[in-house]
Amino acid sequence: MSADVDDRPVTDPASPDPMPDNSLAGILRAYLAKLRGGEVGSLPAVLGLVALVVVFSALRPEQFTNSFNFANLIGQSAGVTVLAMGLVFVLLLGEIDLSAGFAGGTCAGVLGVFLTRQEWPLLPALVAALLAGAVIGLLIGLLVARLGIPSFVVTLAAFLGLQGVLLTMIGEGGTIPYRNDFINGLNNSNLPVWLGWTLGIICIVGYAASTYVTDARRRAKNLTVQPILLWALKTGLLTVVVLAVVGYLSVERSRNPALTSLKGVPVSLLVIVGLLIVLTFMLTRTAWGRHVYAVGGNAEAARRAGINVFRVRLSCFILCSTMAAMAGIMIASRTNSVNPNTGGETTLLYAVGAAVIGGTSLFGGKGRVIDAVIGGTVVAVIDNGMGLLDQPQGTVWMVTGLVLLVAASVDALSRRRASATGHV
Image (cartoon, rainbow, N blue to C red):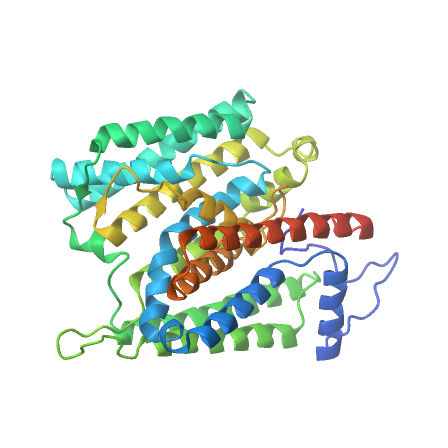
């Protein structure tokens, strides 16, 4: 089971622990010990992402690194990243959801039908689309968790069925345009520059304050807690990253500023960060989140510990499909319309690949929501960079498949190492 919360007391009167080394050298030694024990986390994905950025920046320095392409890359990856964030919860159980892509497309179609064809107001149409996702997840979850049908079979059937539903809803070769500025702006518009800076600073201050207060409370209860130096390093790194991203996106990136201005943080990035904060809180700060890790690590042990395994599984499938609905809307927002291929083609494969590449285990019990963001960025960088190099789509798929294979191999080897060293 993998979780950030460790409720062990600092001291045990029967066998007192040695005083932890809270210096920088001690923190590095502890991190290296975790790596040697098989707890590699997202490190391979981060290193791979850095390598890809360096390579593409060297080969296409003017196109790849400019702010226009940077913002465009965020919009391109938004739908896949949101879909992958939902898939993390199902993968944590050791299950899979092959229908998530077309579940998103179907829900985007529901939004299009109610919003455009039926001319419903935005809010009821949006709620109907999200409810459609929740109902899809409910049905899948009942078949998997109650009847015990393998999730691969259930979601494969749902993949085919929902593809048919979307095709029937829209019509072969047809499209449903979105004519709502809010929906179209989700994956196409930018925040005002001042609002981007304000939200960036709130994000930094919020992270620093919440983690400091949490550590203080745990320290007061004599529980294990990260060294203050490590807290400062994490906060400093987050500050540098946030300020750099917001600053780079706040510069003018329009090719013709006199005609139209193009600057500010994309709204899609705000959606991703907001979902990341909410879902991470649910997974790491609630009893439900700890139960998800427990069920994914060992369902039988979780059941004997009194955890309602059925409800946990059912809730994860509902959450996954609801997130798929949001992803489908983001994808459709990018093109201002929904069509029979929305959520299809490589969308699901890229989303599953993003979660695994980021560090979520296919064997269950290990993973974080941020893994989907990191993995989604890796997939988007490969797709974007190879496109700038004028490589054919076949080469892009081969490279992406190779990266996914490497990520799955790292996962298998790290689990074997963790089992051998007792870190599971």
